[in-house]
Image (tube, rainbow, N blue to C red; front, top):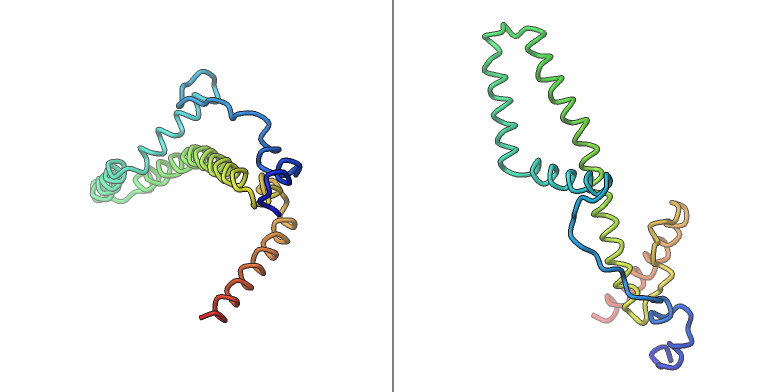
Length: 159
């Protein structure tokens, strides 16, 4: 009955009923506002910061600092240089990485929502489930865990 075309057309939660219009056309990152400029900057910096080249530069900087220790008699100023440098870099990178992570997470949720919408038997009430509070998510997790447990038991009984 669920796959009957007429019942799907009348169902207010069916894929065709939920999709009112086509998704907007999107273009690659082009900085046309402060937000999109920061977005492009964050993406570029986080990709470069995670590259083997940048890792090598960081290792080289630590080696130069360590080897310069005897020259500066391992003074407090010598120690302060590495502590201050790493603190500043870490502080700034947290914001850039978080921006990139938020964007990636949002894109992943949109892709998952599209998959849910495209499946006729999917529970479309799960679209935007990430917007629920922790208590509601735990209820859903318990529900789907019980379904998974029943499926495992059924499969274990069949083999």
